[in-house]
Length: 241
Length: 350
Ligand SMILES: Nc1ncnc2c1ncn2[C@@H]1O[C@H](COP(=O)(O)OP(=O)(O)OP(=O)(O)O)[C@@H](O)[C@H]1O
Ligand SMILES: [Mg+2]
Image (cartoon, rainbow over all chains, first blue to last red):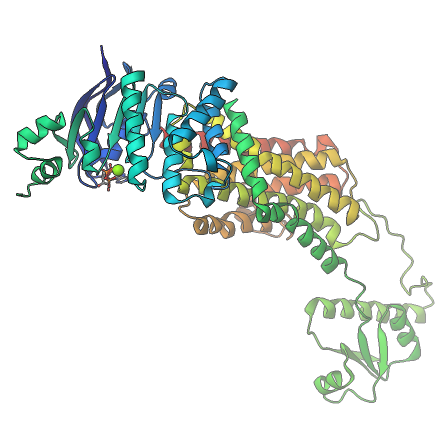
């Protein structure tokens, strides 16, 4: 089977509030899969389930043909949380090498990955600075570098480019494109930025814990008769443009 | 390996936080030294007793008992006379009948004065009956001490408890707040999205913070024994052993309670609930007089057992056999808290 991720009729509620309602989706290996939708729609809850940090009340989550939660599989999943979780007293390099040590990586491999990840997010020059002295965007970039550190087959990025300047965002997206095309990685991103959404192979529109529609960006635009994704987003929310 | 990375990380973080290190390593020494001087403070001045009509023999006996006797014309208004001559009390002899008026500003000092005067009065009557007395004016009696000596002070009994308390308190606070910060900054959650196992996480934290607890324990114990010259009747190794077990209990309890706190402030709120009551049951206050249910309450407090063991070793000179049960109970506490911690970590990885 060539699905990297399968979510099968998953529901989840916090107390009485249903956050995910019978969600199903399939993500092929080597795809960039985007989740868009209004704030509070349940995107973060959904991606946390893929990492095994939340358990579904009903339904199944399968990643690389293994049912989640699965500890071994976390080696193959790089996760970037929506809020930066970094050790502020440590330097960027110490943060990277700490997380690298939690994964199975040889010593030389670890050094190589740290250098690669830091370079990708343009942090090589400030790796010896403490994270407490980083700007918001620098912290975000370090979080992204940590998600890439173990060279996982699947990348799950929760709003990865918030607070990152347009130039760097462009270079990060072209690297994501390269990772997909050259290394065959599967990438799942949530985003509120529509031009990033347009770069995804498949987009799913999440609203009130349900997937309203999914398809390529072109299919979504055709479906709503819209000329751009912004309109799609607004029309899905019932706003006439 | 993963545990090792965690330990290295905790050591790095701690070593960058100079204030916390100072709190951990220097604050207990300061407080211990302060307590030492408070309790061993130089001899208080002799009490001053106004004497009205008191015969020479009794006055001499009173002087021998370290009471400064001041002759006063008449008691008059006792309060005024006491204030005027800066006295602690006035003893009046009216036709062989003694009356004592006490200032009673400090009840325990007043009681001691009253007792000494009573003894002197008894000695005075015994002398009248030709009963031999010691030089100090007391009835001849030799005293032996099972524990300690004639020089033992309250501080000798208190200090083993203090040593245990500091280890418990500071380790509890620092591990609790350390872990709480991990929870609030989301790094603990982030950690749980890597292939690390829950017991690796816990072993890492216990060892990482444990290293600092060990250093603190060694510093406090060595300082108390070598610099403050505390009584150490038993083996220092047993003292260290008890404190290390206590530190483990404090560590696992601090980590566990941080689960129920949403902020540093809420963590500090655990101090009056969890830490302060333990002090009451650690043996600073006498337990024998307490109601049964209160005594039973003391039995669920780790510090009670640690204090009992520490007093046993340091003051009573007990060996390993004497503290074995206490150690066992401490191990039990640690085991319970560690197990609960493993369960509590479940909420980060379903
Ligand atoms: N731990 C929690 N306890 C209770 N409710 C929660 C919890 N986490 C999320 N929710 C609720 O679940 C819903 C979905 O939250 P989620 O974080 O998945 O939204 P989101 O789509 O990621 O939003 P955003 O775009 O703002 O990040 C929200 O209504 C939120 O209030
Ligand atoms: Mg979100």
